[in-house]
Image 1 (tube, rainbow, N blue to C red):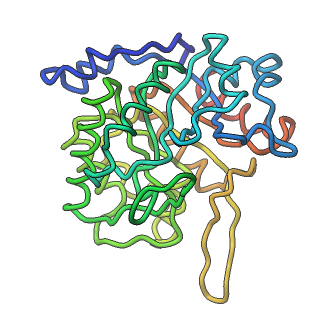
Image 2 (image 1 turned 30 degrees about the vertical axis):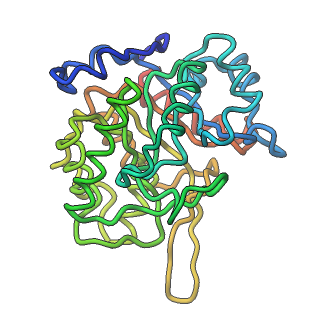
Length: 303
């Protein structure tokens, strides 16, 4: 995947008659990139975005910016966008299945920020970012309830947001220490993708967490999943935790990617024909600690 200049395609994403496969060719190929959110680059020992871009441009093809509209973007993200470098907009404050979240003020803020950073698309964890009223700095993330009714409500929210903002909206499977509902995570999102007629951001680390909690092999369900709709993937490290008899993986974005995650990554890269972007989520770690992961991903992508 060779990096391309990200541009907004509002009319293409907004045309009711254009299916996802019709819109897909207009999405740029961003290659390998990194993520950030407000203040992340200023944390002690955090990855320096400018240094990464200067020393290893192949690992910094684009920047995925995590955004709460109440905070906007920080100086590091603004410096990146001021150079006209490619970005994606990762929302951190919308429950896609709640119509009341699509208020005029929030939508205006999203449009304003998108006009500034010119993202290739919108994406983000499709779960619950808040319980009750949305408050500044809430940042609670829970996975969705894995039922058909919840999938349909989420799909309708994705279609609504795409129409309101004029950009593709790629849902991401969120992490969790527990999941409610009878559906497998991949079956849930397959239903979402079909109803919303959209692509997906598949987080391989989050999927590995889910599979382990359900006692399944890392790639269970991938054969039946519409991998042609995977536009972006995330890769991140996690730490194995235990409390008495309960074992789980903490999604801490460390540089140490678990073997289960790598198994999923390798399968998806080999089988997702429309993959356009890969994010290595390691933003709060020193550059040297991140280089092996970047290198392995670059090799898998043929770089």
